[in-house]
Image (cartoon, rainbow over the protein chains, first blue to last red):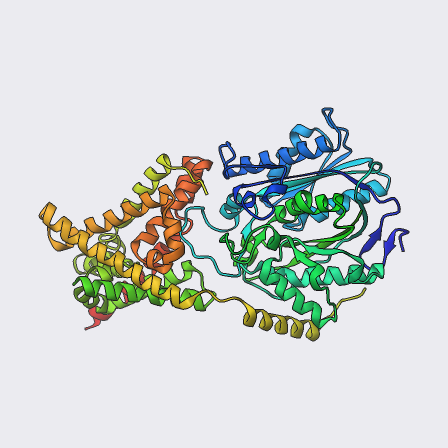
Length: 338
Length: 115
Length: 158
């Protein structure tokens, strides 16, 4: 077995990299949510002064990267970054590619749907711990209108949404990981495997992703030999309310009880009473902006010391679902310890 | 006539809503199904009876589109024979399709998608 | 390799989970939606009837021609509301009450045209206008063809 591997899917980083800078930017609906004050920058509307929703999303990812680099004290141009790892929901990852252009550093685009944030951070941490990089910039973004027009319906189309459907978060999050420095450290990475329990409804992503989240959490705990009590908080990316309910049930079937330490970014980001988001938030930005805007700040305030972040993604396409396929999903976990 | 239009039109919409809420069918499926139903009922002569009874309550829902296509086709068959099925189809429906294309195009020139 | 379940245990695991999901899935407010669809759909048709009478009086044409004018008016209003951004807000409440009448057809075409304007007039507006409404046209035409041929042959054989 390779020297840093633990169990089936986990790696233990021998020299855990530091999160030396993090930034979150968000759209208007997210700014009005319960975490609105925690974001580094917000935008008054979905176009953010740009010509199209896609260009607005690009601006958001670029702003998040710039702010994260500033906070990490990296000011030169091109920045002293060895790799830029980024992903988003748009076809061919155009948001990430166009954001990589002005950075002028080596770029690796990745697609994990809404699990991209943990995928990027996990891989970035492994690149540093493996001796391949000193500093890595990881970013992800999503945009409600841009993803709706690609995956579902035009923005002005009059459709009724199902109560278990989710609202794609508009925003971007970026972190700078470094071999040296100070701040919370990424100690373990559990890369998930694709799961599919036959859910075919693309509006029911929460139920489709719950099995993947549960599997990854279970494997992580088994591989590391830790119990749920080890962590102050175990947070999934975007199961939202219904998906979280399904996850709790699946875990109970496996005798896994997380209790109050089990939270979900899709639930945390919106006020479900005031804001009409049905089951909750989704999208790459759900996990990214809640983590960069709120959770990491809570860690620096000392209120959270050990965090297990489990971003979840639904790996389907409009074509696959129209061809009658069910929705394969994945979840990646990273352990962040302060 | 207004009351009948309200009741029949409302009923057709309500049935569609119940199908949408109780099955996994999409709006596209339900609307296509309604159009086909309108066409079949039109061919059998029943849809015209509904129009006589409820006026706009039968002509405004999308099912009337299916009926109009069939009526157009059958009318032309009387004058041109079997090929009339193809030549006459859009006779009665072209007003709706043409108007929609034109207005949609103009709207896209004037308005922007915002949220 | 742990956690690999093959064959029938995985199938039964899938079936069991899907059942759990189906039972627990939050259902839409069906009664409220049905009533909203009934009332708004009815009102749209009443509007159509009113417009027909209006155009009949104003233009002095037959009831049938006035009906065409009424349909065009409804399409115009739907396109305008779609462009202004109000149609989707109304439809969230009204559901089938707005999507089943010709207003829904107009909204489907207009929302596509407005949305894809950013990809240009040819690729966007022209190329993708029928993305949502195309199915209705295709199925309507195919049905008319089949029914038309069938009825005509039946009539010919009499």
